[in-house]
Image 1 (cartoon, rainbow, N blue to C red):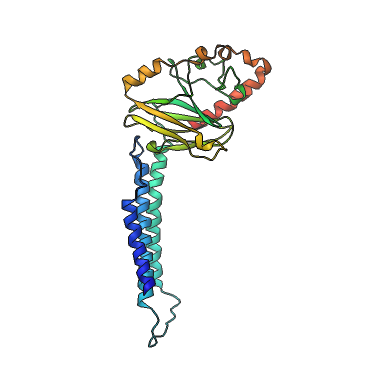
Image 2 (image 1 turned 180 degrees about the vertical axis):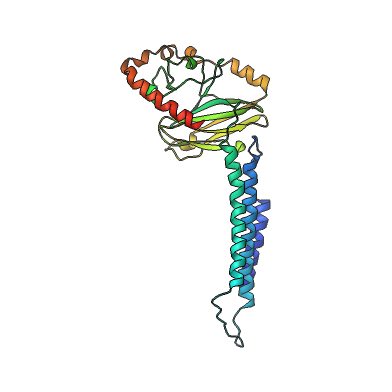
Length: 294
């Protein structure tokens, strides 16, 4: 009897804690409300199943508690109950999978008018690259990284010259504009995560991964690394600022391009140590990764 009461209290307490918990979603700042919907539906389905099982256990403990005047009855099969449980379970699985599949389909379908921004992760800092006046990001490769070219941009690609490079500062994003975030790592696995955006993705060495989003409100939000990447993982943080169009253009106008910040790198002087054939091979492989990411 005591155990049955304890189980009921656990079920009721779990539901109360769920709705009044201090740990809940941060206010969303992107178009990914479908992520929240999928999680809430998961909570609802699993929550109902959890409460039902706990209460059923409490009922059985109370109903079939030991009494001297009763004997146990063994019933090995119950076809009606088995079919009922099969269909309920199938409906629950469909309910769990469908919202996530819908959200994932949207997540990997990048709008054609999305502007490409790049995030470069390294132990333990974030760097960012934005397209210049031509609206295109130049090609890049980790093998081209040097003191005069920390982003590894291809100096022979004319689209690289005016790319805007952001180091050690906040990343600014325009409001209500679709953005495709290209993600590169120069060393180990990292993960670019802004809780208010809901979207996140691993940065995998040797690959260009991506996700996309449309910001929906202005503000300043924390950037976290959600992948354990070494002893300085906890300090790998930054900030992203969502601006309205006028404020974003003003901020963008004050940033410097690859050619301005690193004239030697943009001129290609660091290539003396590598053959043109090797660089061409590296850039070809990198471009293929970019195309697959699109």
